[in-house]
Length: 210
Image (cartoon, rainbow, N blue to C red; front, top):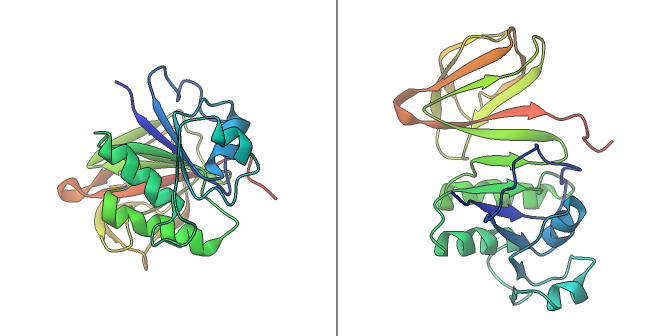
């Protein structure tokens, strides 16, 4: 089944997990997210935004695009999320948007309360995975850093994850009680969110900007 992928600017990864992008995926670039997609070799289906940040405005003009006003209430990333939802996609992946502007980072995270969080978020700093109820992460190494935090600013979640240096047992995870820079103790990690709750599990990546 095809999926929606949103590329946005700032703090993007230099590469993506093998097999992440598949034929038929619908890729939307939010302004300088086009630069992100271009650097990753992705073919964009639609560009949205005011295009005041991209380095390639002339290229965008030759592709399917929807230009917005520069002075607007929504961020370019919000426009992209609204677009993929209007196309009937109920889930999306987010690429980029992980750095450089703290105000943009907060604004992007706030969108998850309005439209739902991404199934995964890939930045130049981390690979962030959404857990709905339960998920097992495999292929890990003991001692690997991992952080757990809510999937929105407003919703806390009760979490159990035992294969950790500081194990969590029905732990109330909120923006004030993150499990920050925990460490794995096995080659797998089982993460349970009570009553179908959602949270992010974040693994740092090696290509983070310095």
